[in-house]
Image 1: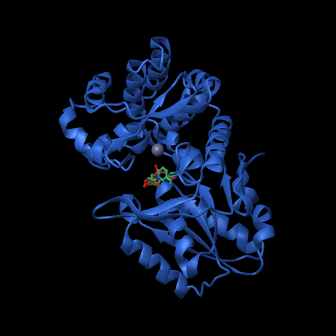
Image 2 (image 1 turned 90 degrees about the vertical axis):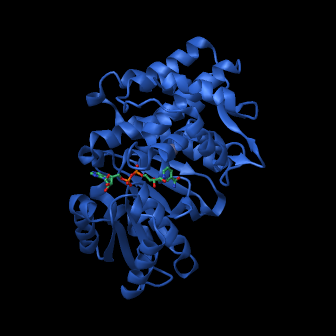
Length: 356
Ligand SMILES: NC(=O)c1ccc[n+]([C@@H]2O[C@H](COP(=O)([O-])OP(=O)(O)OC[C@H]3O[C@@H](n4cnc5c(N)ncnc54)[C@H](O)[C@@H]3O)[C@@H](O)[C@H]2O)c1
Ligand SMILES: [Zn+2]
C-alpha cells in the first residue's frame, strides 16, 4: 500500500492507495470507531456497486452505520440537496461524534464534505473517491462546496477529511469517458510539477488497457498533497493546480455543463495554456509539442468552431481574475508552473486556434 501524507499540522491526514482497499475498510477505520453513528453519503448506483458491500462489511465489524443518497449529476450540489441531507442526518440521530464516509466522485465528495464541515459546526469525514478525477484531485485538499443559481461552487468551505482511501479497482465500472476526463488532470500534474511523470504518462497512454492506474494515481496524489501542504488556502502556489482551468472553465460554461466533462475541458485548456507559455518565451516549441502530443493521446470531444469573443466574458469573470488583473497559470518549462499577469485577452483569443 502506498500512503501519502497531507501535512497540515494537527489537521494532517493520510491518503492510502491500494488495489483491493475496499475489502479492508473495517480494519482501516477501526481506530476511528468508538461506537458513534457512521453515515455513508453516496449515490444509489454507487451504493449498488460498492456501498452496500461496504456497509455490510462495516456492520459485521460492529460499526453503527447508515446511508444517505444524493441524485446523480451536478444537480446534487444544490442548497436543497444539502439541506435534505442535513435533515436526514438529524433523523438518523447523528450528533457531534458522527462520522461521514463520502463514497463517490467529485459531486458526492463536495456535498458530503460541505455537510461534514457544517453539520453541528463540523464533524469528521473520510473520502472514498470512486472516479479517477476524485481520486487524483477533488478528494484531496479539503475544498468542499455546492452551487447556487449565480454560479458553481459559490458556497463552500475548506475542510480537510481525516483520511482518503483510494482503491483503483473501483475504476473498473467507471465509464471510459469519465476515465479519460480524469486522465486530463493526471497529465496536468506532470506538466506543472514533474516532467518525468509527464513523459511516463505519455508512454502509458499508448495503450489505455495496460495503463498503471495505481502508480499514476499515487504520483498525482503525492503532487497534490505536496502543493496543498505548502499552500492550503490557494495563495500563489496552490493556484498552479488551475493550469488549463481558466480556458477549461470558460469552455464548460460556454458549451453548457453536461456537454463537455471537466477533465476534457481542462485538457483542451492546457493546450491553449501551452501555446500561451510558448508565446511568452517560457516554453520551448519542442516542449509545447510534447505537451500537445500527450494531450492528443486522449480521445477528446470534437469542438465546433468557438468564437473567442463568446469565451472572453467567462474568462474575465473567472475567480482567478482578482482586482481586474488576470493571473494566468503558465508553464516555465515542462514540469514547472508559475503564474503570469502578462497574458492579454488577445493572446488568449489567439491561443484558441490550437483547439482545431
Ligand atoms: N473539491 C475539489 O477540489 C474539486 C476539484 C475538482 C472537481 N470538483 C468537482 O467535482 C465534480 C465532478 O466530479 P466527477 O468528475 O468525479 O463527477 P461525478 O461525481 O458527477 O461522477 C460522474 C458519474 O460517474 C458515476 N460514478 C462515479 N464513480 C463510479 C464508478 N466507480 N463506477 C461507475 N459509475 C461511477 C457517478 O454516479 C456519476 O454519475 C464537479 O462538481 C466539480 O466541481 C471538485
Ligand atoms: Zn480540475
